[in-house]
Image (cartoon, rainbow, N blue to C red):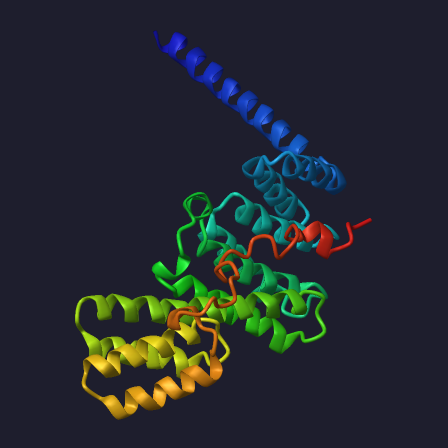
Amino acid sequence: MQKKLSVLVVTCALLGLSGCGLFSKSTDESKNVSASKLYADAQDEMSGGHYEAAIKLYEKLESNYPFGTYAAQAQMNIAYAHYKANDQAEALAAVERFIKLHPNHPQVDYMYYLRGLINFNDQLGFMNFIYAQDPTERDPKATRESFAAFKELVDKFPNSKYAADSIARMNYLIDAMASYEVHVANYYYRRGAYLASLNRAQSAVTQFSQANAREEALFLMIRCYDKLGMYDMRDDTQRIFAKNYPDSRFMGGKGSGDAPWWKFWSKWGPEPSPKDALEAPQ
């Protein structure tokens, strides 16, 4: 019995060693894949829209070749792949990690731009396009964060090739924030909370003086002043309104007839990827 037990122990030990050898061989084979091969495979997965598979390959590339030519681009592509997969939290985490690790990278401006895009597109989901929902009815947190990201890009990198697009998006975001204030003001007005409505409308006028929503905010102020019996303020505001918006639709005019400011998706072409932002490493 003792002899049989000894044989069994030895056999198990040999099998364990054999298994370790096989595992090590498998690991070694993975590590022996070249950086260029890993990168090419990851790019193929990305092109096919297989973002999770692409992320795993980019992460393997970064792990196996942390100081290689491809490492920084792999990190950028990881952030972009999470963004395309609609994983906002992981995309933002990857962006922040890249900026922290490579603050002086020649293409770090792209990551600031991507940070803005992640929040910019968060305020308009796919269902919004289908049902034409006005995004001003949603929490403006993503709008504010997107504006801050684009502003940081423009402030830090005024000559960036993404600056002009960022400024254009910032203008729309200003309208978004102003329109949110007007939406809340209308909400209060419909419920008879005229003072609260007036305060939100005034906020839209004073904080976002160039926004398209300023027209409706001024008109709402006129109505609130009237409901509150503040007739002098009503008449003064009405004179300002008539001077600035003589053909306003709110006063019976035809107005501009333009589509709502938030129907902007035809304004821009395809959003650039890190592959466009960086030359592929040789």
